[in-house]
Image (cartoon, rainbow, N blue to C red; front, side):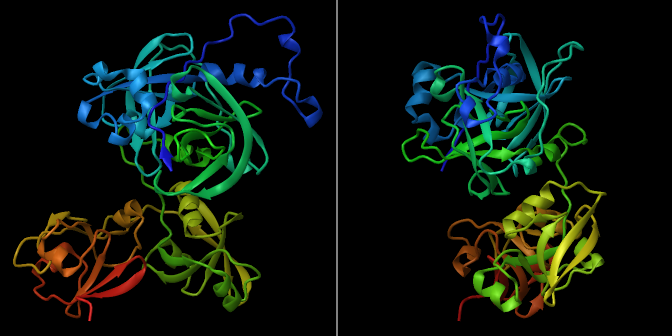
Length: 455
């Protein structure tokens, strides 16, 4: 999997059209393939911008990127002290609101946006969201209404729909590629926390990051984010962040504010073929509920262990990733209908979405001797922190860091472990763990309960 943190997208507006251009139309059948996608490109191009960001040299690009020949050819070795990175973004509101990839502007000292007509503006970072790898920028064009792309609901897409990808692969200049939606809700790790992407065979290469994935009605359906490649070039497997996640990142919060997403408050596992047979389900799919957090929206709505979540507002839930993704697209204060399998039949539950509470306070702390887990950095696992870290919302203390050769490391502790008891005594807060002197731990790791030291 190759991440795309380096993009230049120079879109020159069509100032004069060749004779006959007005008669061009988007193909509506295979017989009309000799026609042109130019009307869509003319509509989309002015809303796609160049993003120039300056960063400290040591953090400007991963070492793997700096070894990329395309990166080195474009910047040149003598430019390394500048640490300029290039990316693209999409204007999604005439007031100058721009959506792009977070990694494009990460660690930037200053951000300059260049429009398709070559005007430049200094941009302000409104919000950056690591979990989606999306960021929101804002430019001030003096009250002028800027060209923008309407956001289309990515849930409307079907496999086989034609899409266009716009970018500047390998720095060769403006490039528009077309292809189809190859898959939806594709589970891909290493890009963002929700692992749910639009897969397309429209050529996406290094340099397309932050560019627009556009449907044939000229609307934005995704932000190009990554490609699968062993050699660095496109092999017809590219991934875009669905527009369903974009709306939540745009949000209404104050600039710089973090994004708070609703929580359900259940611990569950994807239903396998064997599990489906045991539960009486007609096919594998859904999330089997194992635990329900007290006073969570799920508990208050009546969700019980043994239920299988099959749908959210009528949209099918295939696995745990799909459930996390779907809740990330919802807004606090709204209602959602959960489709459940219980006792051999379907049921519907209405749930009021609320923010996960910050209780107990996370109190991030590096434990000191004489604590048995000295050296480890830990935090009390509130529902809010569990949602941020995509951890099970269970009582306990979560491990954030374990230095090599520390007492905690020697005991076998790992990042992500949730310590729930020490010598049989339950542990809910950092203070309780700091005071514990025992060495026999019960903890949760990857959904399983383990005991350390191992017997």
